[in-house]
Image 1 (tube, rainbow, N blue to C red):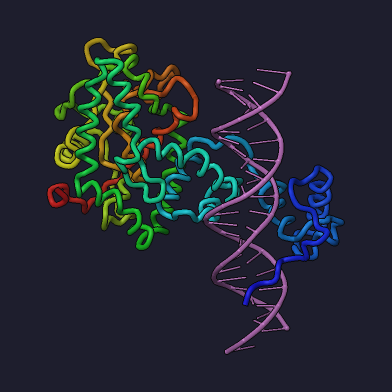
Image 2: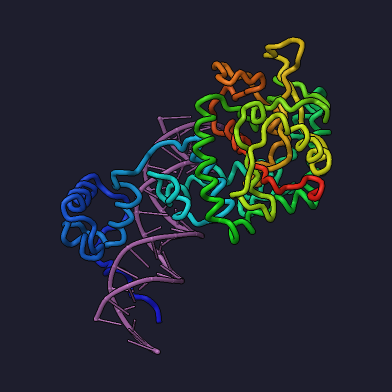
Length: 362
DNA sequence: AAACGCCGCAACCGCCGAGGT
DNA sequence: AACCTCGGCGGTTGCGGCGTT
């Protein structure tokens, strides 16, 4: 049947809006409300089509729009929501107050998507893709500095994890969650976001993707499965959320702290993820007797992009601000560049359902 | 200083579904 | 039931700013 254009394009202006047009539109809507968009431009004295006015208002002029850089929490939320909702930008925007779907879409396409690709994550499926991983930079980095060759073994270990069908099954689960428990999951997500926000105010271990720098900052410790979990997530008694395990009901969860983490995490790492990645920052060790170990388990959160724990995860810099939780292994990257934020989402917290049986799962 | 290329973002386009007539 | 209008959505485009050569 075809659709008539929303308005007669003849004589109507297109392109960037002028301050005068913005002022007219804003003044009219503040007085009259948006009402009928088709008739609005005529009533407001604008030579624009109604659709253009609506877009200008909803994407730019609306007073509740938050402008400026996306925060850590916002970016985290976008990635998580995208893994569940896909390109449902309006649905994602509905959970990010002050952000428009257009802004989120643009931010995804220009920032997040590229970062995921660089980290070997398929931005569509959120699954790890070895063919997307920038192996050339990793290898060239290793060749330039033989001391960093240890990282290659880590890469191999993580590669095995990526190829492990169980891991793959985990990584593809959000699609099933989307269908079965999306509402519950989103509820959890919002709670998680609040928790994440709290965490960020305290201390966030962030990871850098600049693999050509890490050899100067960290020395990789060979994988060790007997070391107590001293990672920041476990030391802080933050609830851990495991939202991507197939069949899990997000509302039947239990807190999972440092005490039981050794029982649960080590077998998981051994069985599913080959080896956890332990490393220490030998430039800023605060306790000479106990190396600062940091573990980024391959056991993943709701968002599969967090599988990019491998190469990038070995880069960290000692947090310079006080750590209120006295976690000895809380790191944050010293720079605040965008690349350095690539892996901060690894902070996702896990919740282990009481019904979850590790043995059965293995 | 000029040319060029890249990047980010605002704006546009076309399609769709809901609701009204 | 068929048609139409409207608002909303996701994908795409094009311009301006910025960095590099």
